[in-house]
Structure formats: C-alpha cells, structure tokens
Image (tube, rainbow, N blue to C red; front, side, top):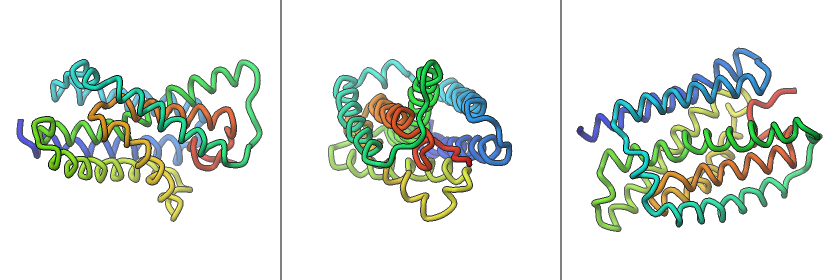
Length: 219
C-alpha cells in the first residue's frame, strides 16, 4: 500500500467532521444531545470503514508505549482542566442530568473528538511514511507533518459551526495543538483522547453553556 493512498484518508476525515458539524450542528438546529448522537454515529462509522479498508491493527498501535501515552494524556488533561476552570462559570447542570452530561458531552464527546481531531491524522501520517522505522530526526519532522494534518482536520470540523468562521477558529487550533502532544510525543493514539475528554468533562461541570469548549453554541 503506497504512501499517497494512505494520505488520501485525511480528506474524507476532514469532510466527515465538517459535514457532521455543518449539516447537523448548524443547518439543522437539533437538540444538542441528539446532534451528538448523530455526530458520534457518523465518526464511528467512518473509523469502522477506515479500519476495515486499511487493515489497521488497533491492538498493536494502542499497545505501543501505552503507559507513557496515558500518563501524558492525564498530565495534559490536568492542564486543559485548569484552562477551563480559569474561565468564567456559566449556569450549571444538576442532578441526574449532570451525571448524564458528564458521560455523554464530557467523556464520549471528548473521546470521539480526540480520536478524530488528533489521533486519526497522526496515525494516517505514521502509517503513510512508516515513521516507526525512521530515525529520531525524521520522526520529529513527520511529527510536524502530522501536526499540520491535525490542524487541517480540526479547522474543517470547527468551520461547520457558524461561530468559528472568524478569528475564533484560532482558539480550538491552539487547544488541539496542546491536546495532540501526548500522541505526537509517545507515538500512541491513546493520550490525546484522554486529554480531550478531561477538557470536556471539566467544561460540562464548570461551564456547560461555554461558547468555546462544547459546540454547537446556541442562544
């Protein structure tokens, strides 16, 4: 399987993210939790197709330096939590719905976002150029290439939401640059979804009406 064939998956990944947020998060003003269900289903289906079509060995990729990846994911997760907590509080959820929101909007939404926006572009790049077999210098260089594709997918996904079609688009790209570090540094896809989920959970608890961390943002 040649390099170009692997890299062709970046565009469908970006399109899956943009199409989900644009159609179901912007064009159709669905209830947020229903939108998330549709978004999750689309992205999980896309991953299923990608895994099947490219014969991805999930266990092999996830087991490589997994301890370091989880550790860095937790460390950067703590940094992202601190960032969320440093921002103003909003009206909060309470009772059973808070527990549901922590699971649905925090854990699941955070993991799906982390996989799509960070882990997926990285793993495509690593597979396309067989980076594990490269020297340290080349690994660093390809890390920057993976970061570029991470920004491409992150930008595409967020442009589906109306409020990010402005200078505001810079903020999720800065955030996802930090979130991507656990995966980029350890060459393991687990770290970034952990970090992303920690950020979402903190936002659900501290500021569920945030205009940054939990799109779509509506009045």
